[in-house]
Image: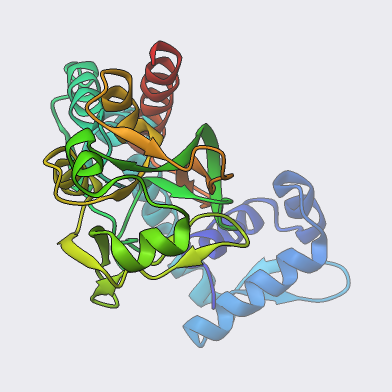
Amino acid sequence: MVNKLEALRYFCSAAETLNFRETAQRLAVSPQVVTRMIADLETLLGESLFKRNTRNIKLTEFGEQFLPKATQYLAEGEQLFAKHNVKEKAMQGVVRITLPPMPYNDEILFELLTALEPYPDIAIDWRVGIDKLKSVDDQIDIGLRICQEPELDWVAQHICTFSEKIVASPALLKRLDFPKDLQDLAQNYPLSGLIDPKLKRIWQWQINAEQRFMPNRAIFFASDVQSELQSALAGRTCSYLINSVCDPYLENDRLVELFPEIEKQKWQLYLYRPYQTIVAERVMWVYNRLKEILLAKIVQT
């Protein structure tokens, strides 16, 4: 497919020099590229632009008539993409961000929106959920995801490592006592289940690479871990939560960790943006600011 603007640029330069080799030197390409581009433009127009022989080159009658139109079109294109015009619009538009429910989301959002005060024309589309939104289908610019490794089409920044913990309230353990092992927990204790929004069923409890089970005894179902936390705090269920969610309540004894001696699954938190050849300046600004906010937050906690 012919790049029309580029083809016009080659034509105007060749019309000025009347020498394809000199045109190639000006444009830092080979003479063959110039010849091919002019031929493609002539095919597109259905007319010859130059008369050529081994000694010289000149514009055809059609080429002479077409040249001022091409020159004007190029000038208007240059004006359209002039740096000051692009710069004015660089910090305007929507930035779509997807992230999972996390304890510090509200603080992160507040800091980001505060930092955006000089840029009132940037609109933030902030989507919190455990569903994995797709970069292309959902037009996601930036994401936070808890996973084991980044995807191949990400430009990713590792933020921190999470582990998971099985927790219950002292009141529940007083009523039912401590489970003897994971099998006892799975078969005889009330559990909470985190719903997979795509499959419309609960996730299995992946304890580690060797141990996992489906919480078939679940009596509380939720689509976010904060709700699971409330179920555990209320003494309703034993729950399997990431450490950032439950650690504050383990420290103040409102929750107790079960089976701390068993190695638990590790998860990584990544800030990412889909790999693209060209990234809008507003997206890069928000990405870099989010990275600073997240890394500072992790250091504090």
